[in-house]
Amino acid sequence: MEQPTTPPPVRRRGEPWALGTVLGYASANVFDRLAVAQADPFVGPLLRGLPSLGLGIVLVARHRTLAQIRPGSTQFIGWRPILAFVVAGLVSTCGLFLYYLAMRLGGVAITVPVQETYVIWGTLIAWVFLHERIHPYALGGVLLIFLGLVGLSLGEWRGLPFSPHWYWAIPLAFGTALAYGISGVLWRDGQLRGAHQSVAILLQFATSVATGLLGLIAAGHWHNLQSAAPRAVLMLLASGVLSGILAIYCMFTALRLMAVARVYAFSSITPLVATLFAHFVLHEFLSPLMIAGILLVSLGVVLTQVFRPRDERQA
Image (tube, rainbow, N blue to C red; front, side):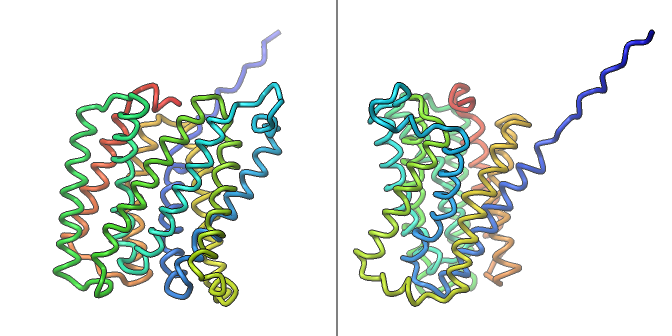
């Protein structure tokens, strides 16, 4: 009697999921730009964080990891990782306030490529505080990013600037990049201490929403949330879904199906895709020099992300 043959395993490809990550983040940038054209930028961080907070609640319920943050439980992870995620949420939300201000002044073409330099700050901060080594190729990536930003700025200056004060978007977006770099290192430190990913998402975005609300009240802009156009509110919520749920899910799926280095290589083209979206959808100015600058930034991000310590890339 013939033994039944086992069908060969189906080979699943991770490239569509990696591309989904890029499209999710790039689309979120376009929705953010459309929203700040109609709504107060201070409203952005609060509304954008709500979908991610919902995701964190669902994941914690699904994985039953709430005991990790319950003092007295045998699964309690301790106060240090909890504090790391709380501070990460606080810092990254401060970066989001700067991001939305940069969007209003410089648009997508300036803000997003500068924001992507967070990989530089994350690498340097991890080198100092987590004692992770820096690969020589990553240093080359830093140089390419710098040259790309110079080309991007020159292209904007010689072309049709987004606004009379577009240049202020550069330091604002650098502030966002620094905040993201710090929060990324804190996130990694918390996970290295045993925190489940669902707990990390819940703590960070609970803090993010609270910080966004307090920042809105402290700045005296609470009334702008109440008077915000429904279309702008929906765009900010859509941005939160695209970046905080869709893009994250696609990235995690891609990481399960393909090499980490290839996922990072795909992610590095997010500034280019976001800028092209902004050019064709929002009619933002884009010159060959600016495209060259963005390509250099993307290549620099590839080198900085791909050539990271092996243990960090596998974490």
